[in-house]
Image (cartoon, rainbow, N blue to C red; front, side, top):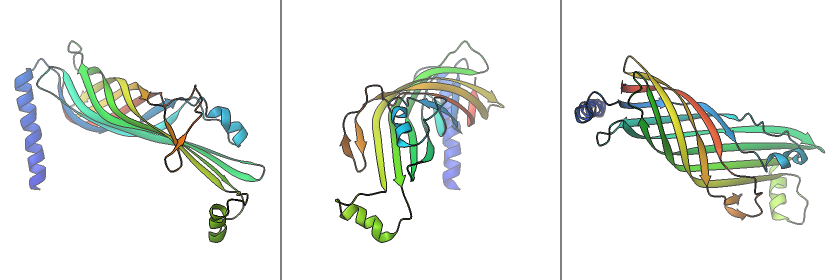
Amino acid sequence: MKKFIFVITFCFTTINYSQDEMGWDAKFAIGIGYTPGWIIPNYNGINEKLTNFGVEKFSSAGLFVTGQAGYISIAVIKNVRIGGMGLSGSISHSGSKDGFYKEAKYSTSMGGLTIEYSIPFIKNVAVSFGAMFGLGNTTLELYQNKGTLDWNSAWDEVTNPDEKTQNINRKLSNSFFTITPTLNIDIPFYRFFAFRVGGGYMLALGKNWKADNNQALNGIPSNLNSNALFLQAGIFIGYFNY
């Protein structure tokens, strides 16, 4: 209870101080929210292989992601706010080929520090542009299974390399730094709630892929990267003076 009272007191002290420093003509906000959305990754280089693997291609329409975000206006520069955000999601396709069960699962995630500037002459809402600076990850998991598995056969497949295995799985991943330009519109309700719509473009800085237990993966197609367009909507709670 004491910690809760301390947090509330700190937040309102910050609000009063920031508004005194910036003036009521500046946009001020402090909030945290849930931000589900939609991301459209680059499946080039992956879809080229999936048909022969035995499952359908990933749709160019993209996939659903969930996320969280938060921010606070700073007193040093009017209409500038800092915060953080993160999102993640996955999609999988399965099928059968030559008696084998096949599955391909694509996962994506990103998160980091956000810096935004809210356009001052737009009243009652906050139209903010900026960028996220952080980390991201793309993972492709491939599975092939045939028949019923049991304890001994699972070990035989890895202890007897001369035997032809029927059950294979691969985990291919790309971890990277990202600079993600963003544009968000926050619409406040009763000063303590805000609705957000926005989006951005994740630029992946790094093309080193790893396989399984962090082994180097060479021969990555030139048209494969982890860049992705994303759209978001969300509800924030906090304090919003627009």
